[in-house]
Image (cartoon, rainbow over all chains, first blue to last red):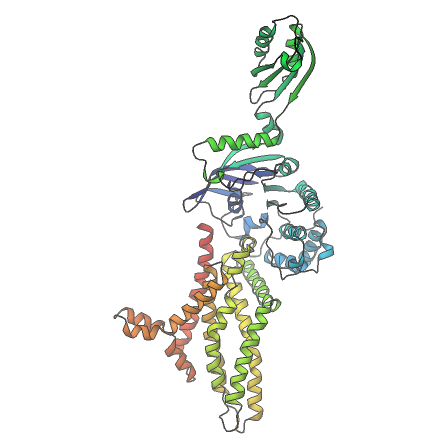
Length: 335
Length: 255
């Protein structure tokens, strides 16, 4: 549906986007996640055709996005960051203006406006001036305008930025509903938002895609940590258990919290096993190995990284890579 | 469950024309939604009426609108840039340009629509001056000569068209509307004084400056002479500026 192929964009000496590629399948809700200055908005502006890539290509349903002819633009609804709208216009009037711009005929336009206002809970404020509306209503007016021509693809740039918690909840609910029958790309630097809304996360930093997958895949990617609370069969058995655990497939590292934390002379030990990235669930393997060694386990617990930890790790990796730098300065980490 | 569908465009030209009209209409009405539009009209009409009442509507004076046209020509100098200063600058500043440029309208319809909207506003501003014609016809002892009045309006429209074109281009160049105003004003003043500058310039440049100069053309207009060459000059000038503004907008996507 949306095909982004190796796009680059520089503004003078600043290389904002340095080779971003991804493809959105129909019906997918993807989140473009990254710190401020990562190149999210520039990427989005290239998808919407507001900017033309220096290199690479964007197509929407096979149509070139940089071509200003109406084709790709009719496929796409776009909510720019902070939803700028003429303050002197009334909500219904603005929607009418947008409908006309997209060439919707009178009857169709009326229906589309009624539908979009209903969908975005705007009917109450239809005759209010946009400049007098709260930020939440303004955002919804922008969303309604993006929906008007019933686009197959919706691109939302920071849709909940600056909203209060109630408005955020309402807007998320709306986005979730809209995503049922559309392809969506949502840019955000707010992790929980992406985690809740999207079935795919594309993490960008310093102008490149650093990770791409479902939230579950990303979390799995870095590997889990297992906490094991078990009793030694005899004194000085630590070494044997350690070796045994290291022989379990996919185990990367084992460390032990000894008697100090569990009480002096106690046979109880706590082991911390970290799995390799991409490992399957190891709980069963560990339990079997323990049973074979006749060690009684009273607790075995898997701890997955949160998406936030994954995100932070990916950003650290991006920072460590030689091309990082510019984006790192203005970084505001996730809420 | 969706009730709306997008009809395929009849033709890209028809879509562009429709978008152009939509944008012109929005622009025109937005002048009257803001105090600025009313203030521009009020100031212009106040000064124009003052001239009309003090110099023309005086017993013994010839029944012509010459003074009114002369003052209007001068008043256009600050008024036209004031009309166009926010045209595109404000869209660039507030970010509303984004959703316009990503609509099927595109840069060309956008610029042309806005220019037409500004022209319509200028027309609306000049419209009340028709009352002067009525007043003159009512109180003049001799029958009114329609020729100079019609040519006066044509000249005013041509000059206005060029000034608004320059203003539109200036507005496309910057997101700062004050700067857009100054750019347009100085560009027009530059054209005004091109003749004087040309007299000092080396040959070659001199011819160019003379041909661009506004003052001899305005002087001809003041005499009531409408030269085809002048008409072509003003229309081409306005056209070049509007095309220039569209090119600037298109280049913004590439920058």
